[in-house]
Length: 241
Ligand SMILES: *Cc1c(COP(=O)(O)O)cnc(C)c1O
Image (cartoon, rainbow, N blue to C red; front, side, top):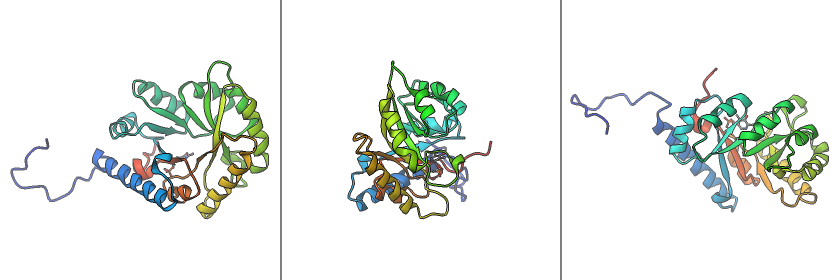
């Protein structure tokens, strides 16, 4: 219970923007937005997984999200993700790794991540292969001309799909992409959907599409996204470290 205000209710609303009630409000706003976009697309909201990207935020924020029912957490930096996953090992969370991965860190990421969204080269597939366990993966496609952005160039996608299919312990769920800045996101997502349709001939089970972020998730849902990676629209602005 909140304390009574003997001098009347305070005239100023609480200004702490990280209060749980604000987090709950933003989460609910995104849930409604996803459901609306799904309805527009003639899709079931339940077929869309919203991953809350919590990078740069403290473990306490992830605990608040958990209390609000969130189970899918996304991180993009290995050390931060590893430490958060260790701190929250008692919770039934699904950890999605969405950042670029150095080859020498691949097995460490595999140890705590449930899903890796950023497989973008054959050497990484090899590093993730295992005879003991299976890791769910997306192949990230680079829709820009900037090779530093991560992701495989569409021209090299088919070969990478083949390596993922033959690697033991690597289960290919589908494709992941980030809409390039300055391009109409829906066009970019339509392109990813076309690439996804092309690779079905090689990989019929790789039907998932990880695309859509805070600013463009509705467009992604309209183009068939199954996994949205949403940060700031839910978490609020990321703290500057
Ligand atoms: C940070 C990040 C997101 C979330 O971005 P927002 O704009 O905050 O929603 C999604 N995908 C990847 C790969 C990211 O690094």
